[in-house]
Length: 298
Image: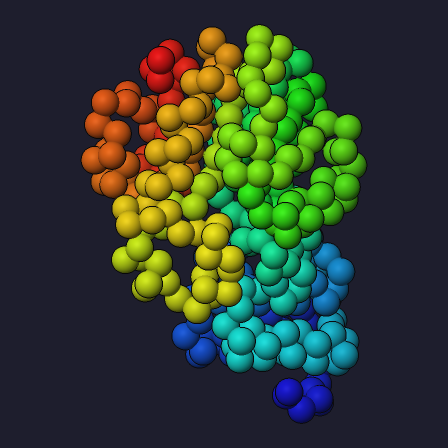
């Protein structure tokens, strides 16, 4: 741990000091922060009991010596363990919304979150509609969907009971137990058998999709996450094949399924050349997230 600082620092100075320490450690980013400066802001804001965005309005405030020491200790832990910062702090932010986070599930992150917040999915979300978050993990996407569309019902499922326990904590944290229903099981096996009254207008899914070669090359930060939530088989499409095969049974007539595939665009096109997917534009480009309408799956 660093020695106790002898001078008073501003919040901004403390952030910059932490950022320099992180930048020198050759860490990998992408679990809720894009670089050392972003993680430093996150670390310092946590000591101030503020969100990272709120902390930006307090950059010229003084930070106590105790808060400096605690922030520095978090940075040391981040460097020595190579764990995602969200696990160390027990919290992650996605689209400005806080989520409880633990190593029982992957860190909340998905390009789908952007599409929920910007309203791109509203054409498939009628009033009193039904939505499903397949492979919900920590529950963050289901929660963002429920917060954005308070008049819909959201089902969410996952094969991992530890992940679902994290999701349940997050659903409770945001007061959404009456709007979100959690199910445990392997993909479609988790959901009640479909019938006329039990189909979905929109299914969203951020499944395990990392291909085997990429899994072996992932940085330490990703290996700290459950492999079950990342590994998608030899070409990354193992679960996606199962998802797409049965999706028509669970979609309403004018429904759609939205799937994140990350960097597996070429593998998806090779596996499903016959599907007229609609590629959705997100900040990472137009090859990360696709939408398939029910009529194109039948």
